[in-house]
Image 1 (tube, rainbow, N blue to C red):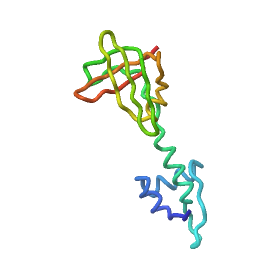
Image 2 (cartoon, rainbow, N blue to C red; image 1 turned 45 degrees about the vertical axis):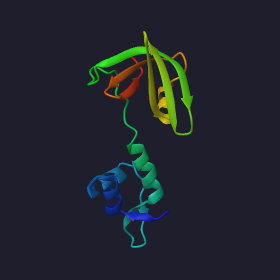
Image 3 (cartoon, rainbow, N blue to C red; image 1 turned 120 degrees about the vertical axis):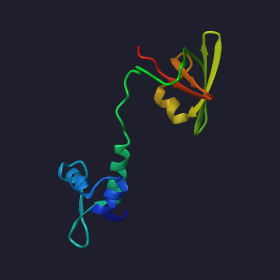
Image 4 (cartoon, rainbow, N blue to C red; image 1 turned 30 degrees about the vertical axis):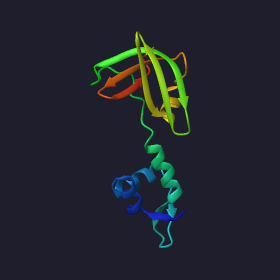
Length: 132
């Protein structure tokens, strides 16, 4: 993997050169010495750091949402393939089906018997886990 100049690495992350230098000084990102003797960043290190930057804090309990149709129910069926998942829920007299990424279904821990909330807005169904 190539090594990148500070300015190149900063541009790829969408931050200033100074911010990237500060992160290096704080030990958040390792630096390398480039052929010209200046500081740089390994492409491999930068890729791992960029991936960590996408890990955001959990949003916590939902206190408001734009979807007005929120139905608490029980998951009755989960069908997963390599990329997608189909989740069926029974919310009172209503059967709700949501198509989502497999990754989302896995992260939510959706399985038959899970209690979940279906948020419906237009033709888009979002499945949430209610606060215990």
